[in-house]
Structure formats: C-alpha cells, structure tokens
Image (spheres, rainbow, N blue to C red):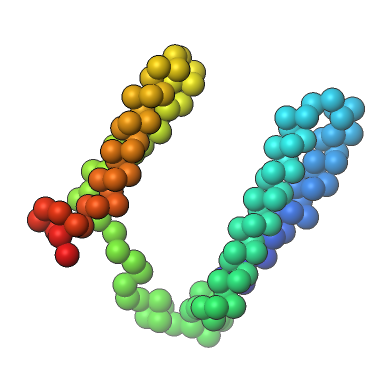
Amino acid sequence: MKIESWLFSGGVIFFLPVCVVYGYLTNWNEWVGIVGLLLLAGLSLMVGWYLATTAKRVGARPEDRLDAEIHEGAGEQGHFSPWSWWPIVLAMGAAGGFLGIAVGFWITYIAAGLTVVAIIGWVYEYSRGDHAH
C-alpha cells in the first residue's frame, strides 16, 4: 500500500500549485474553482494518510514486493453478494436525489425514502430470508 499512499499524497503536491495558478489566472474572483481544488488537495491528503497508516498496520502485501509470486495473492478477498439487488435500488435512490435537485425538490423526498429502504435492506440482507446467518 505504500505506492498507493504515495500516489494519493502526491496529489497534494499537484493540486495546491494548480489551485494557486488557477486563482492567479482568474484574478482570485472565481471562488468555486479555488475552493474545489483546495478540497481536492485535502481529500487526496486524507486518502494518502489513510493508506499510509493502513500499510503500517497490515505490512507488506505481495503487490508491494518485487519477489512475490502470483499464488501469494490468491485466496478470499472479501465477502460479496452476487445475487443482491440492493445496490441497484440504492443507485436508483441516489439518481432520484440528483433528479430532484435538478427537476423538482419533491422528488428528493421520494428518493430519500427509497435510499433509506435500500440501505436498511442491504445492511440486513444476511439477517433474514434464505441467506440468514
């Protein structure tokens, strides 16, 4: 994870000078872009810091070593639900939220309800039904 942390931390070195150049070229009158670039630098710093602290905790992975073999990265990578429909319902709720902002705010209330139902359904997916633990 050291390479990933350096890539994201390097974003700060890129985005801060870009922010200064952008501010200079717009005579410091266009605050949306300036604030956006500053937030992007901060986000890059936060992700880089998280990956660096995780790399210290986890240690070297096979991807970090030059002498690693392919079979060292084999095995279970996590638990995924290939039959789950809840991510699609959650995406529809998020899309409805953006649609409500663009078209009519009343749609946002419906989308918020759909989003809450989707999150609850996804969290409790393995607590009920055929796949309960």
